[in-house]
Image (cartoon, rainbow, N blue to C red; front, side, top):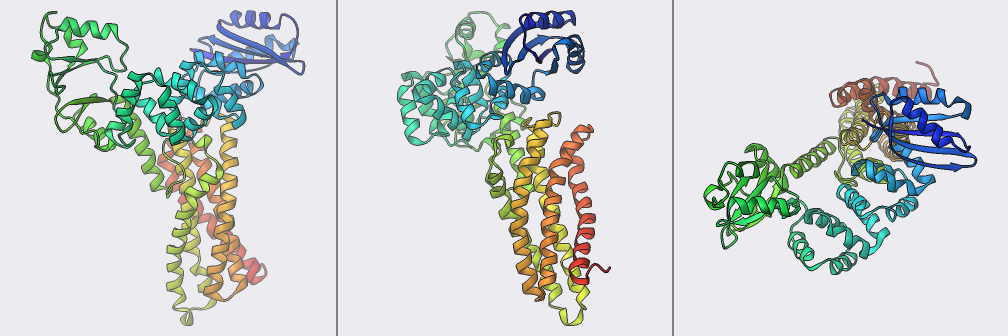
Length: 529
């Protein structure tokens, strides 16, 4: 297991050597290190191989380096340590060159996204071609544009050369037309030809996710030719051979593992198996994903109307598609109408974007739920004033439930996709900070609407104030409840999706009863029950 050990201690000559000796004495094999000092305090970053639990390793190292006033932080190489790594990168950006050798692209991007924008733009320029290619393959559209603007068209073109054409197209589609043209002009002819063929397909289509980096041979080629092709070329997909006729029409597919069952001189056209299903490049990618699941196909050929082979959709791409579509469906169920896309990371989304994605739905729900109060209002001549107070209870309860569900959906999505971790205190604080801003804005808007509607219905300023105050309080409470409940559930090893909905509803129903009645009692009855 690879782990990260971060040591903060009194700076002195030989500290790195002594820290390395301590690590080795605890059975940790150091594979990389980086050291520097800040205001007389040393910072040591060690990448180690160890079977020891990182927290135990940190405690033992801290004890053994006690004379140096050492503070030791350790964690598995992954999401749980990205916050601490981001702090080091902020102090010494050059560390990113070492981290890119050991962190998967997703985690490397997670470190970078925790930096301020100006710092991120500096760090992008310190990454290698492979490092940038890796994070670009994981980046959402906003981040891809940020990287492109930071490194310029010439450097971006060099990176796209090393990427799969399908992934290169995803990056190019995120750019504005001017920058896209500049990058395309700098690409080698062969790469540009592949990219231009794929960029014609919409991102949501099968053509938009297929890859052309796959061995394609004619039907009269032999098994030996196929094996040579797999060995000699670096394809993205290497486990199948695509067989076509002289006109480029699909004949069939052969798993590479099956080639060894035939004689070297056997013709591929005789042993290729026609796929059970093919798709048109304009087919919706979600439909292609469903077909692959239905037919248990790990590779799905894409052909045109004449049957000519265009590319393959890989099961890896389908898994990504299904994850995005599921995230989008969950967001819709929670009332997230837009503002952020399924591919965007919660940790990088601004609070105002969260407001834009959530506020329209909440306003619409409020207006719909106002019908309930309007119906009760129509019987005002038959109902005493207390009944009118009660008319607003279901409206406020529903509003609390909707706010809580939205917050839970956003955080559930971020947890499910690994964008935030319940093990990271800084991630939890980030959730609280983002939700505090968005909750306050939403609460104020809903409070104004609630006041206006209640005043129009009742003609009572006191009752309208009671409804407005209750809406503000309930909205803020519901937002924090919905956002933090999934985190708490994950901490307790409980599936947050199972308990979030019903628990949020229950908590808010009880809370509304207390909050609303307390406010009404204070404003209308002077505190008397």
